[in-house]
Amino acid sequence: MHFLAHHPECVFSHLTACMVLLSYSHSVCFGLCRYNADTDRLELSYSRFKKSDLPVLGRSVLAVFRALWLIDVREGIGEDGEYTECSNMTIINLAVRIIGPTHEQQLTIYLLSLQVISYFNTIVIQIL
Image (cartoon, rainbow, N blue to C red; front, side):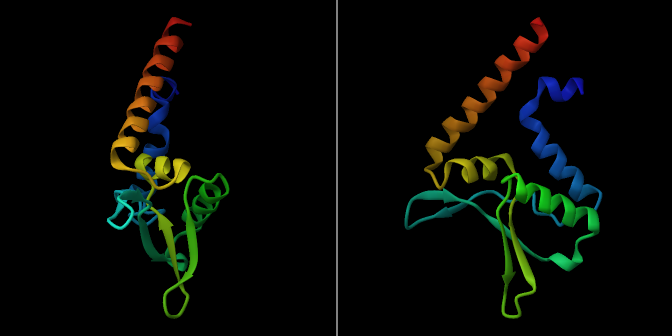
């Protein structure tokens, strides 16, 4: 808990990486944002998989993340509709999900601001 108190920006990344390492999820947490040349913006990137291939815990975590609006899930994808697309579980994709498609420079400013805010939170926690 001490680590999480000092590095709150890492919680999402560690949770999703553990899911992949423990085989509760497909490797959906390592994709970067997709660049759309038409709009000159970064958009969410997705991974495609069969939901039936996920273990029960993986489906549960997927449902919780979806309910908390941490990921975007599209079901019924493909010719037969048996595939599911899930936005990649990275902090960068989470930021794009929250702020919407954005230019790379603006996204970089948002992410650096998140790091600065987390740093100051760490100092406040250490002082208290």
